[in-house]
Each structure stands twice: as C-alpha cells, then as structure tokens.
Length: 115
Image 1 (cartoon, one colour):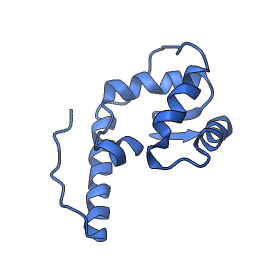
Image 2: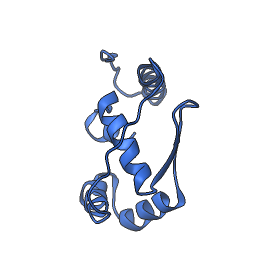
Image 3: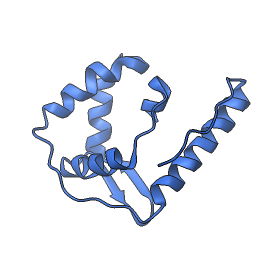
Image 4: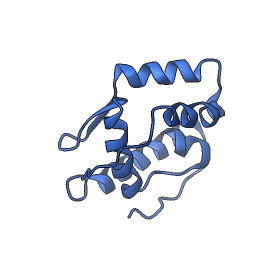
C-alpha cells in the first residue's frame, strides 16, 4: 500500500468506499466486494506505467493526481462492503506488514486502532 509506505497512513473505510466507485467509473480498477477482490484493469496498469516511468517511490505525488484529474470530474456513487470486511482487511494487512518489518529487521510497529 503506497500510502502506508510513504507516510504510514492506511485508508479509512470512508475513503476506500468513496474511491472505489470513482476508480470503477473511469475503468481503472475492477472490484468484487463480496469476494474482497480489487484489481487494476489494463487501463489502470497502463496509466500507472505511463505516468510513473522514471519516477521513484515519491514520484506518484507529481504523476498520479494530475493524471486522474485529466480523467474528468470524479463520479460518486454508492459502494459498500460486507459488515466488518474493511476492518478485517486492515487487521490482516497490518499483521503482514508487521511480519515483513520483523523479517527485514525493521522497527517494531504498534497496532493502531481500527475503526
């Protein structure tokens, strides 16, 4: 998760459920909330490859937001997740991140509260 890598931030459920329909509307991702599966489409992969060419980890800040802005005004629509699915996914992500840091000899991380 790029946001976590850069500034140690994990999306909130509200941010996630607002972003998914916007990204779906412009064809950048595919999603199946019931199966807890989200993926980049070929269009999404192409946008990322094109805009991130020769940019480092922090290059996305100068590349991705302007590229998304050129796609037009975001289209909001409802998106919901099964009860508890987001919190479970965050717990699993944090568990894996903690294991990875430990394996790499990185700093120990306290588990933040989950919404």
